Image 1 (tube, rainbow, N blue to C red):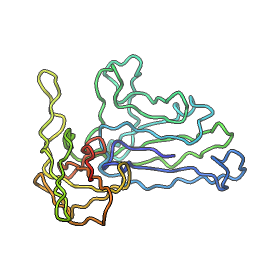
Image 2 (image 1 turned 180 degrees about the vertical axis):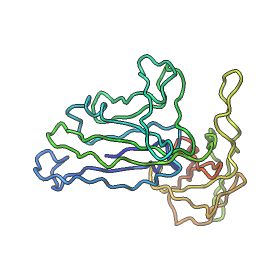
Image 3 (image 1 turned 60 degrees about the vertical axis):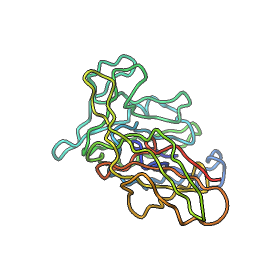
Image 4 (image 1 turned 30 degrees about the horizontal axis):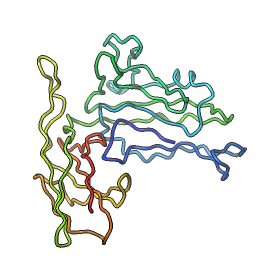
Length: 266
């Protein structure tokens, strides 16, 4: 149960958990006491401009149309937040600020899409801009209700972020250490005419390591690396280790879509 604001640092998505049963009953199906919480663990600064704004539920919504109609995105203009204009994703014209809120068929995931397959282009949020995301109260299919959380205030990254790392790092384990190296990124342009600069080459990188391929990655670089190699001399013992690299530009570390492919030893 949670949501994400854009795409965030490596595999650690921004997360808000806002509902859980008090009892141990599975999903609260039989419990009569429900704890409504909104556990805010977000660092709501430097939110990526290109990721969808969505939240998911552990139990489907009973009236999904009410959820969609109650979702709002507001942009701060001066001292007030003003609702943005929406565009119908089914017949886009390219004039709306973002696409209207949509859901998946299972009625347990709702989002403002910033891109739609076949639609007229990506609708990124603006850099260095404050927003307010409104989520309404939600009636669940089991008869319970999630109270409307306090509107979520967040601010987008200040400038253009780094280009995605498209190559897999190389590793060379020897003498109790691991040499990790990677290919530098370059500026990324669209294929349009004339080309449009979308992302910048990284000016530095961080290295992350885990003993699990999918979870638990920890940054092992004390400070960002300006080159394209790093020697890991902090191995904790035998077993498999997994490495991934994140690019950094304008003090913005690439989101989880920017992180490199995983490389492992042995």
